[in-house]
Image (tube, rainbow over all chains, first blue to last red):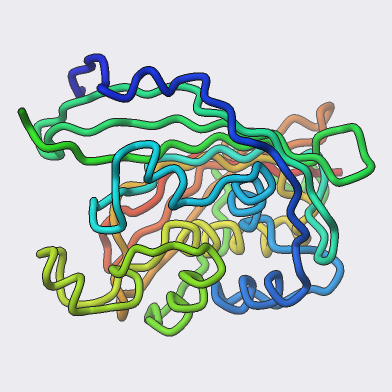
Length: 148
Length: 135
């Protein structure tokens, strides 16, 4: 079990992303399905697109999160966990509006992994013009940290 | 898919990628706007001491696992929840095998819960649970 301590970035907990909208272009849905070996479907996007749609519709990019966390492309950032709950399906061509925030940041230290920050993100996504969420998504990213 | 056609312990048909290709990693890097060169540049992977071949994106590994669920459930619409931990990297050329089994069926709620996992050349890379809709 990793030891837990306060992260240098703990003050970011509660940080809300700007929000926004993202149109899931038909070609993106097609290319995504093709890249994972699934049959592209013009009416229904592959559900594994949910994580990506959640991030993009919340007005944030992977590089934005890296910058907030003081990381770069070479920092060895890893995905730790993802939790997607669907209240509807994603459709190619549809526009989604998202809200997202940094839910928590914990500094941990594992015997093998060394010191790292576990960043917990939380997103809610609605199809434009619809009040009910189509998707709720949580994700944890792992940011390796040099030992002091 | 009918609830009474499922039993706890019932195994899903494994979903196998015999050899993960590095080419789709480039597509994914562009779609995700992911600047990490480990997904498209073997020299960067070597320089970081992570191995010799490009490393697949986590969302792609997740996509393989969720494709198993779509095939089992019969439609993407039936996938209600997926929660997984990422346990390791998948390198280009590796064989990925996704497996799952039914853990419980709730006919009243119209759902079935599954245990799911994926491995790369025998190493665990994903582990978690999924919920699908049933009639």
